[in-house]
Length: 247
Image 1 (tube, rainbow, N blue to C red):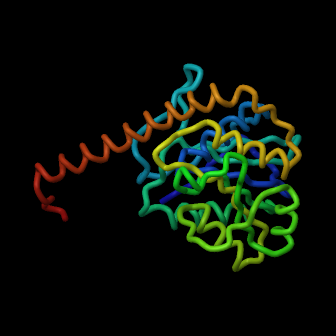
Image 2 (image 1 turned 120 degrees about the vertical axis):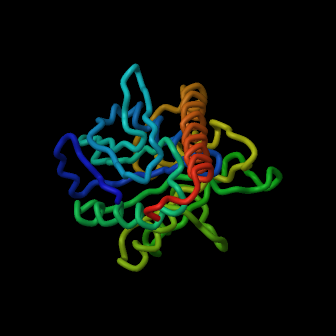
């Protein structure tokens, strides 16, 4: 079971929800981590599950849950930062829990941030794409210089949130930065943050993003590796002991 828990009570009515789970190019977590830092967003909650890998994140000498929720009351923003890839088998449950929370909290808009795998020769260093849940949102986003995705397939939590939003006629759009799947480049996260600046009028300075994004990328890769190593070790232990008598 997946649960969202808060350490501080917040009234998120009218807020915008931003998510960027680990995916192609790690664009989402690099961008979200930078936004959280530059906007001095407050840590208010986390997501837990007995099916998550048994890992913690350590930041500024403080152990923290690897899936955290941050808020800016001033800007009416709430965001979720995940430092490990959600296992595929949990994607639908996680998405539904997250969407139910968003709707029940009277949040008015979802913005997803991620990478869109593309061959190097097809990557325009300044071009960012998007998918929107409705035509009005599409027009507003195009005015900010983003290009709509004409044909394609989206996957993961952001795709499920988009699906629920389309059915519910809820405002949802995904910022998609073309990335070379073989390269992790802070420039991808910079393009995502610049796009958020345009859409939400955040005015976040991206001058320090290159250095900080590299640090975030290194931490996330370490957590993801530890998570995979633990899962592999657990599987080996089960294989070596044979089937349980209680199976």
